[in-house]
Length: 235
Image 1: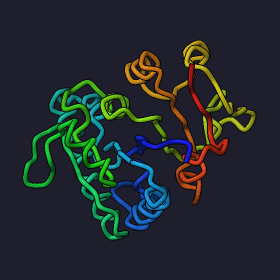
Image 2: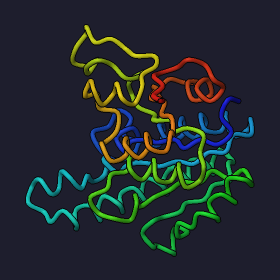
Image 3: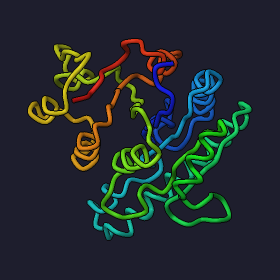
Image 4: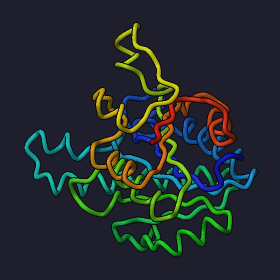
């Protein structure tokens, strides 16, 4: 395997499958099997999931809700998703720990960096819920922050699109895909890979990002083994 320790970033919407909202158990089971394929190869896996399939703080704030309250609701949504993924992983016989930046001791461990690293070293998948624990920060920022803290080799952003394009390929058939692109070029071209805070943090810490299609069976294993799948962003 090219990468020994990875952080996998999944959107909450990815868990919906073909549904309009909520969690699709079939999609969860598929993701669990994809993750299992790399854990059996000795890859250490951490996961950050968004909460947009349940509640998105920015959307709530745009409709008049207090932004801080809305973001706290979004953080709790990521814990719900984390619990769902934990259940699917354990059904696939993968040892798993859920850590939350928001203290919910009855359902998740508090985030403790050294403990998280120890879990990874023992072959457990660690799911980070609760975002950063602070309002105004997205789960993209949480993903980059946690990846840096655990010394991950790469951030793998699993999406429903097979990489970064010049424009939205679902809306523009003429959009062209990048196989490799630099951090500077992403900023210069105004491409949306992650929010600005997360992207800048990744750039400053020289942490590469790979954007790929998580819904295609086998892609996660291919990415981790070094195949040219999706789009790689690096210096």
